[in-house]
Length: 324
Image 1: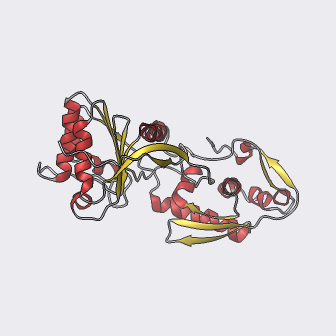
Image 2 (image 1 turned 60 degrees about the vertical axis):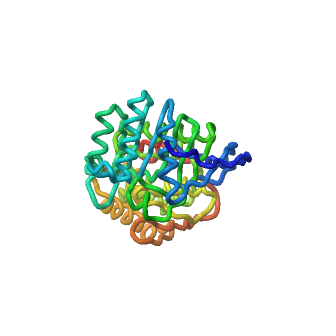
Image 3 (image 1 turned 120 degrees about the vertical axis):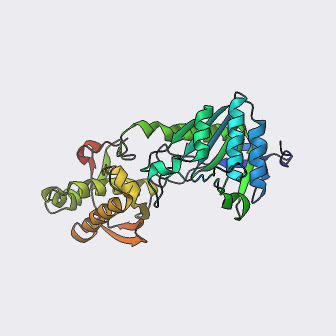
């Protein structure tokens, strides 16, 4: 077992940021939910020894959530050694759960799950949860005994463990660990729902410019032109604008596609192309916003909100979009 990392004796205040169950959109600024904690730096080569110390000392539970895990069938490989520590923890009676991202641009979702180490974990009784491949989960998170949190930039790859510069922090805080575990549980809930279930949207009537519903207004023209997807997008983006408190903001094209209920079978590039097409309709034909595209993955939008009276629009008017 490795030596215990040098946790600072002084108590500091750590921010456990508020989160959304399906954070496809940026949240409005809120006061952080502060918790007390002891912390130690676990950057660079200290990460591996900190992870080993935590896993070897685990008594009740180990929860790991990773964006990228690359092991080997060579037991000397550093990632293989960490996975063996997880196997040994499970053999001691510790509950071990591993969450893995499966969305990569260079391989099919199931390829990342077919590794020798992961097969060993499954055989040992480790609970392996693959995030749905329609959403990227970029975690590098280890939680032990609902008390210790090791988090930062390190994936479980030989480069991250032995070569790269990686910033990581080890935190001793049951309150922070609880918040992280609640977040993982919340994220895992939609895993059994259809992958194209929209994630965000208004739940109460929303005030939109009355001019949009006038005879030649933007919403009226979209309805007349049977531009159903553009109609939904306009209301969804307007709701997001109100939540952010600004008429201009960035949107994630793939997240917007999911919220619009685009087919889960579409790849990322197809989804982005369809969303770009809809945004161009809103910009060039409906003329309700300006749009600029950044590297094909994000878009900057700026609303052109007409002055004057507003009209309450019920969520049902979106036409069957299953807002949650």
